[in-house]
Image (cartoon, rainbow, N blue to C red; front, side, top):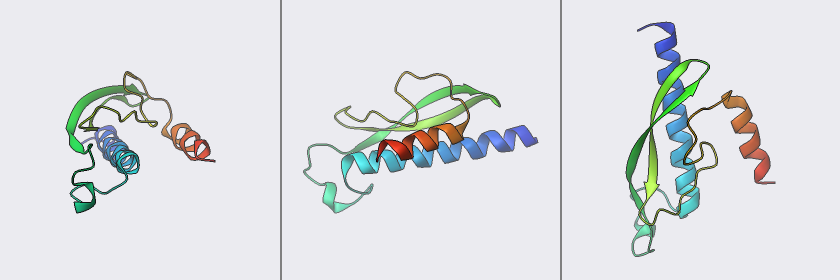
Length: 97
């Protein structure tokens, strides 16, 4: 695997974990937690998305909720490009304040 391939893979894994954390925060419980039972909304698989950035194209799996109410902050629903990830992280951390 090339250096660029390793970076893309690492970036995809990091983005997916951050999106999972966003969904968990949105729903208010961890995946597979009994606290989610009969809440009216739950984890509901993933959809695949391709993003373009400085390193080329990155394929990620975006988690979704059953009611379709989850609107990620990190990568918006219809966003196709992503700039430097550091800017996204900083903007996410300042929105909570």
